[in-house]
Length: 108
Image (cartoon, rainbow, N blue to C red; front, side):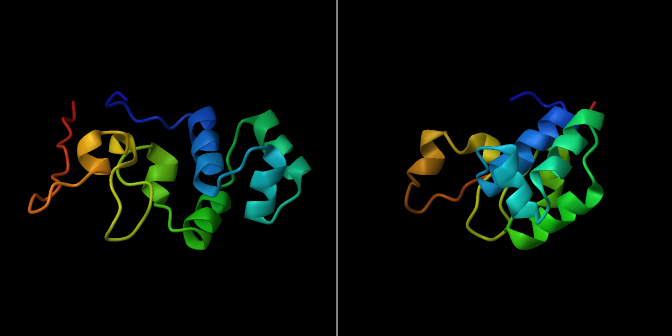
């Protein structure tokens, strides 16, 4: 993944679905407590209601920053890793006695 923030509608919408494990817009609607038609309406105008970020972040242990911007940890809590690094072998199989170091970001 690149270092650019992914704040477009499609990126945020995908992260919302990913965060709740939704396979469809209807599944996302259920997680949000709204009808599937409400999700479809948001897709039509390409606007995420801010309350959706709040609801998912509160209902699931998901970082609002990750939902909005796509960087950092997806899940909140002490035993989680950066979502972009989950497939790295070193993070799947921890080495005893070695601490995981968070990668630094270069801001331009």
